[in-house]
View (cartoon, rainbow, N blue to C red):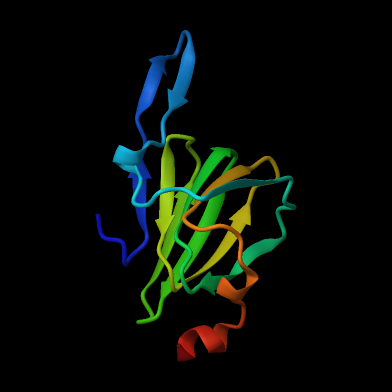
Length: 132
């Protein structure tokens, strides 16, 4: 795994159409040990979220319902667009990676985070991000 670039993680999908499915996020398929888990939901479709980066935080985003479009940008200017619409796929976002997210109204996003919340870890100004 390359922890310097965003990439998709396929989580195990266990089950069958007749019973339903579960997916597992375990030590063997995570690039870090989780310190915090949170979720976002009922985000209006016209709202862009994100618009920030982190000094130390690494994240995995999973759309457990609905669809999420994520645009990432690294310090070298590399931009990627990702579409999450399956609960068995997550997007790894490394530290020092700018991101913006757009959701369908029914989207529920789980975020698996590498550190506990710390406002000091945020870079909220795009020009500051580019200058670090």
